[in-house]
Amino acid sequence: MEDNLLKSDLFKGLSANQYNRVIACGYHQLLRPKSVLFHQGDRAINFYIVNKGRLKLSKLNEQGGEVIVRFINTGELTAAVSSLKERNYPVTAEAVGNTEVIGWDKTTIVELINEYPEIAISLLNIVLERIDDIQHRYLELSTERVEQRIARSLLRLMRSSGKKTADGILIDFPVTRQDIASFSGTTLFTVSRTLSTWGKKGWVKSGRERIIITDPHTLVLFSENA
Amino acid sequence: MEDNLLKSDLFKGLSANQYNRVIACGYHQLLRPKSVLFHQGDRAINFYIVNKGRLKLSKLNEQGGEVIVRFINTGELTAAVSSLKERNYPVTAEAVGNTEVIGWDKTTIVELINEYPEIAISLLNIVLERIDDIQHRYLELSTERVEQRIARSLLRLMRSSGKKTADGILIDFPVTRQDIASFSGTTLFTVSRTLSTWGKKGWVKSGRERIIITDPHTLVLFSENA
DNA sequence: CGCTCTATTGATAAACCTCAAATACAGTGG
DNA sequence: CCACTGTATTTGAGGTTTATCAATAGAGCG
Image (cartoon, rainbow over all chains, first blue to last red; front, side, top):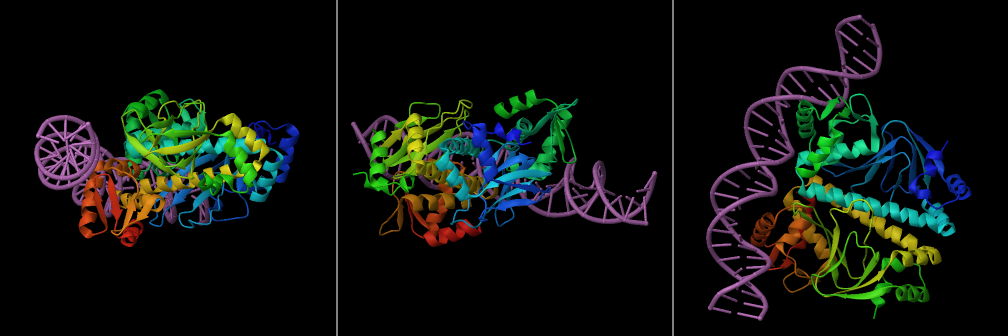
């Protein structure tokens, strides 16, 4: 049932037995669509792996501004860091569609690391890659124009959650203009206009909570060169 | 000589002996001002701790756009992640003033972690905090106006490298308008204008590569409320 | 004192947001 | 099957923010 997790980066270098033991230490949780797994500042559980479905990691400021930090797809990991400082601006993890996760609390993780240091290495690798990713997005947000960023967002979603269809590559979960906006650092209006334009050009086909990328190649070129 | 490092988060939970052993495994390096410690993609060494001075971590895109990801101050850590994908947009670590670092290569780090798993926990904590920080900055960049972001940048620099003087709190290393701009996601022109305005209001005093925050309190209020 | 790097300031323009109003869509209950 | 309701989306007009470009001034160094 959870064989998809075996392939997860977290378990790189572990034997099947060790893997089973680690899984046994965690606990399963089912999430309905749009239910919240954690806010930063919650304490009980610290690490989660998505067994099925997808989480949306977002961050709010008090003026109501939202950014989507990333999506956590099946097999991927996220952590609820309960740092003492910084209670404001929590990170929120919300299920997109029906989602299953397995969670470990901090104590358990520390025990497991002491038992199997490979886990620590895996975690470090994962986390370093995440830093790389968010730094990259930071650069993009800082230096690129809106349309370029929207293109990159679509391509990211396509790569992580794309599904081939007759028309093109469908982003395989309900995604609103506002989602794309929060993921690209712009407004839903700009996203809407941009998708309209690209629709006319034949690059994408989009509808209510639904985006199909019909010409990925051109979109890639656009995202890199303009 | 390196007692300042003992206090570093990296060595939390280690005995003096263990600390000495870890330090002995690394190798020292002296850097002249503005010399480059690494580009991402370099391989030999993977983790560095700043023993003296300061590093500027920045990222470039091919259009020449630059962002400063963060400054690594004395006692802090950084890693040169040589991921296979993504050769473009390297992260560059450059010395600000004369700087000393100690470096460990990946193999050594892995060995040390296997020996002292506490190190892995420390590293994880450090890296998770960094993620938190950059995510926070990402939110700010996405949702706040330029002046607010400039204020936050100054305050960050003040907190990490501020030095009390008669006039106010001096940012204790040479920092250009362009640096502030790259750190805030704007242009040097906007930074210049903003500092001029704030100079007239008595919030800061600034000159060539030199910024003193004369009214930190007001600047904090401004950074949070407008 | 000339050279180079940094900073200032103004004019102009582009990019993008904000707000308002209309329209499309999906589900629900009659 | 249809009307109804609550979202999601589209589109336009207008305004703000901030970048861009150009020209000038200042600071430090040999």
